[in-house]
Image (cartoon, rainbow, N blue to C red):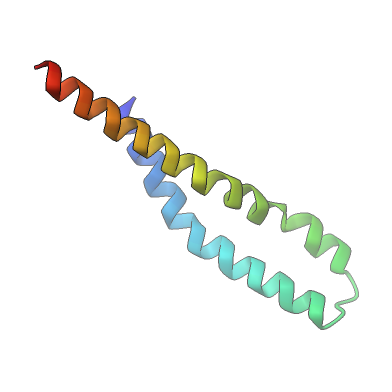
Length: 75
């Protein structure tokens, strides 16, 4: 389970930069009144999902750290 979470965190960090770049491009298209802005905005839902995932991942990391600390005290 620990390795899976570490892999998830790694993937999340790797994709976060790219998602932020795409969101910035979408925002620029919005400001330029792009003709198909509705499609761009509908596809930009990934950014809001990433925004929700990052704090959840941080919370999970804190729980994992607390658990590891607890287990080390037992040993």
